[in-house]
Image (cartoon, rainbow, N blue to C red; front, side, top):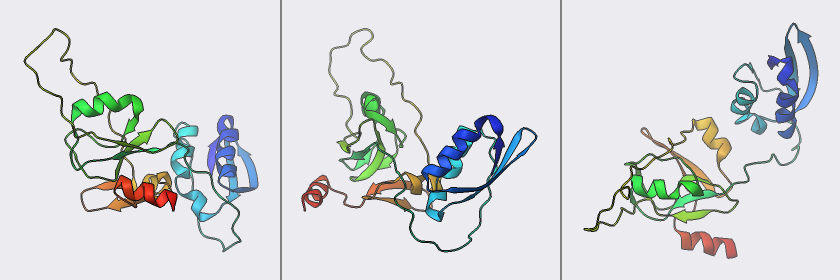
Length: 197
């Protein structure tokens, strides 16, 4: 890996969190050239973290060397998922009202289904939400009551990012037109029953 000397500490920290061992570190001008031995599963998702930590300046190349004994668990994400509890179409009004719960992976107007992971919860546990619910219509109108929904753009994953992001009870669903995350057990009752057993 190659990166600027000023961000080398942060980059080395990311690699060691993923069970990487530093083999060599050499300075060439303002750049550091580091060689690591890291498990293949530790590489998944590492590139994006390094690019973020080094302001897009990290250069990374890797190749398979050998099989080795398991080096332990690699820490995953600690936040929970926002899971759809209904089939239907994502409604802007519902997404707007639920934005304080976390970040969304779906755009308004996108088709969703029960059990699909549609966002990241701001807390540690999973939360079933309904973003297919439209605003109730009434005859009464007041000024300022019908403000436009201000929706933060949805987070879109590459295949590598999605594989790195999922938890043990989630799948990445790849189709010709979509890349979605979903729970293994689609209905909330099945997920609760499985947790107890």
